[in-house]
Length: 128
Image (cartoon, rainbow, N blue to C red; front, side):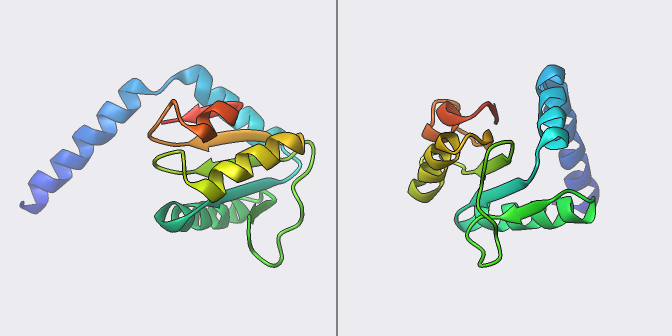
């Protein structure tokens, strides 16, 4: 694939994604981020790597963001936001974290490819 073809393909994919975005869901996500006392990100494997990069970006933007599982991460509590990332939505440590976060009174956003998954069911809001 040539550069121009690849660029055109990426552009088409971005256009398709933007066409399907639910505006009210994005507004709710923004509200959850802005109202969170702390933001915790968690994923396993490749999803965990994406989560770490996202947490770093949030810190750069001035948000109090932490990666769950790091030695310096404070405990999750009420009024916190937990963002869970799992392609399947069934990765056991991530699914267990959803249950714990719910029990602790945190808000949950799940990012998953499976809307019927464990982490989607526990989420206040899920994104596919």
